Image (cartoon, rainbow over all chains, first blue to last red; front, side, top):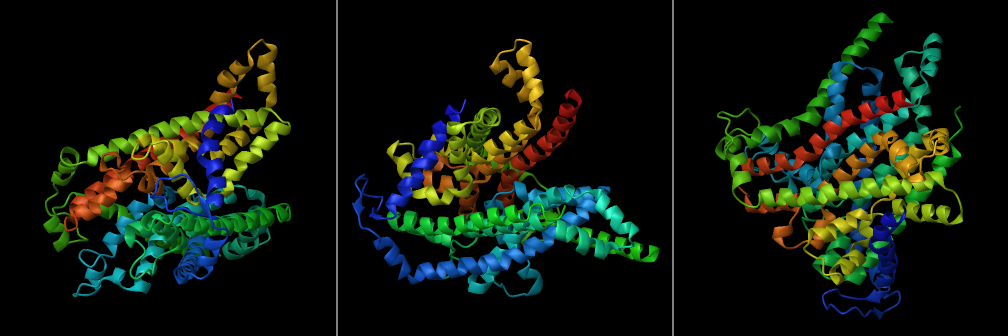
Length: 279
Length: 275
């Protein structure tokens, strides 16, 4: 009964991992159609280390991650608590509205944001009579993408926090209440410490998702203006499929993989060490 | 204390309404925009439509390639959901029931899939699909999606482990075959987990852009996401037409979620009563 899953998993995932690693040490353009690889050792990596576009895309990626992580984490923590603490009709509606972006594609969210910030029909028309094009400004473009990313990402993190909140025994709150703890002390002294593990999981997931962001950037700016929004995954795509430097693109993929692997391992360690601390 | 509590409640409601507005307004806005004429939308972007009209929507479905994109995405997503759910249910069952060297090794083998994001393998997968001459076909994209079973296998395994072993053992004693135990006992009990992985599989296949972008260049095989992007270039000035396209790309996963979200609750209660 394992055969069907293996039948697709091996040729379209496992073999590509090995192949991708091999490709990053080779010189293959992808258009020639020939299957033979010319080995060239660590040349791709040496070139990467000297590629200013690569370093700039890495910097933009970190900037993007830094801009989005804290707002998503804070908003989702507050939202999940608000939803969890009351079961009124209003909170049910809020729940559906907040979770809706989970069902939306990056393309849809990106187009929606393009509409909202467009100089013709968007928010800029409310503020200024002259057409203001945020997307033409290097900083403005990245901020707009970050806002769209936060809007689309809060739902998923709220979902994870809600699962974490459901695992907190109600007794603890009742005990705190009897001890005279008010709403805020209860939040800081009971909820926040008990959500420590969920927060770590959430944090790492948010960082990983931000690192992998591709669809929003493709939809909203295609890396422009002047590469100001060219994050690592987009840089990789461009190298491999626009410039047709497939081996070079594979080397970027290996770097991206190493970053995400480091984050995942960190997550596994962090969640294992603190799992039974509070009970 | 009581006074304090009331103030807090009021603040909470205000925050709720504010957040609801931020999250829901863009969605409301795009729906409203799709029933405006373009002139109306440009003149009055944030208000309600002067004369609601469905011309955009009829034009969307009767002229142009939109129905084709929609159908392509639907075919890809349905095959992916059915494939992922059936494969991971079987694999998850094996990993839950059996222990041993080979099985443990294979489980870790699948766990690797969780740690490695798909983008990392775009170049080699592109190469393999090209070698199989499956570029510009829906099959190529489906094959890639069907490889992504790691997450759902783990969900199914965890769920199967939570079902008491005695149920299956009792059936075996009564003379049921091993397959019947899986098919008639474990499968119906695991409906909620299957719904969960079905929702995830549907979302990820319907909403994905990266793989179609790389594997499909022929507009006849475009998925809806590519189609909606193409719309952006085609109707640069016609904002209301673009809104109409957007509405119909958001609706299917949303409907799927709302229907099966209730299914999860039903599945949970039904399962509990049966046990």
